[in-house]
Length: 236
Length: 216
Image (cartoon, rainbow over all chains, first blue to last red; front, top):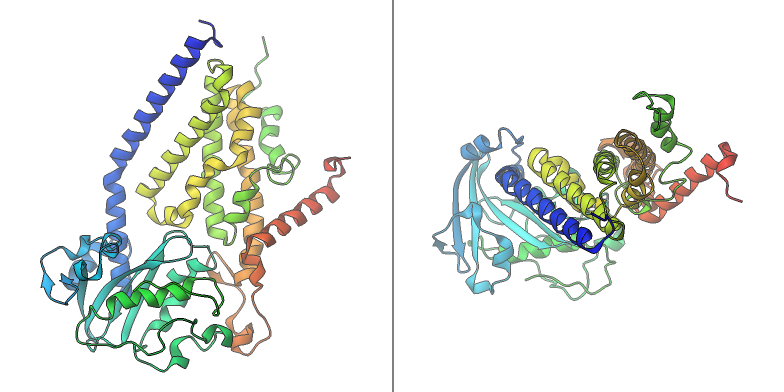
């Protein structure tokens, strides 16, 4: 058969496409369970990291069973509703109006008391960023945080998942004087709040939900690379 | 009928060693600059990227070399592209399944290996007209040359831009201005323009040492 003829070219292209498609689908389907498991284990590691429990990929599951005693789902009014906290997809919830969202809450009993862990999700510069916020029982003081991102720049936005970025959140209360909102090591231009934002501190209350959608506010300015004077868009 | 070279004859070994210096894909062939700027802000993603690209080039070269006599001329580039894309997707899926933390390091850059000019360049220039073993060695050599430049650039960018290497602190905390010292990280080094200037400096050094590379 003539290698450069029309029919040969056509058959060759068709066979190649079918072979490659079959190969890739087979690989994707057979590897999917492992990939889903890896993502779950990483989620458990992140939840544990927000309460300062170090977990490797091998012991993450057992540490999670031991330490996270309760996981439940609340609606926008703060009432507990039915649902599996671990599998709630915050990306879908964020696209719903506030009254219709269902939000997961995890509880961990540590030697320093009961801690509430709230998953967060917001918008970074290049893609979504998410995290887990562990609050003390007073629901005003941060016990620990853990952040992660999809595609931020290494050395810049990607720093949010380093301990150096996450440690200073520890012990900070939600209602606190504006001067102490940022680490003192930052230069003064970065310590001013951006314009067009709330100038009053948050209202903390007995319901974990009230601080919830506002937590997404917290992490956005810390990763966006714009100067303090520019208009910032915040998720409410 | 061509005479068969032994597997590791001098001519074959030249395929491995040339791309490290005199025909380096980044500094001499000037291919693959984009990823050299993007992933070298830190050393660890640079190393992971170099290994992934080497694997993909070597396998891609072998596959195209095995198919080279059957590919119709009119869809030559498309076939090469399909092979590269399929390999990169496979590598990405395997990384996500077996070494999840490494794939998190690469994040979006794993898929961008498809756009790396070195792959298409080597497939078209070498694998389409050479035997599988030679193509494999050429792929390894070019991958190694690419990796060498990536590691050098990543080394300087992370050291001067963050004061660390592979995540370990190299410049002591006490030297920094915020802690009472006089040193500050060079913030420009983390941004892509400085990576381009670093590569330019490497090209300068290379051409001073090897006059033959200078174009007239």
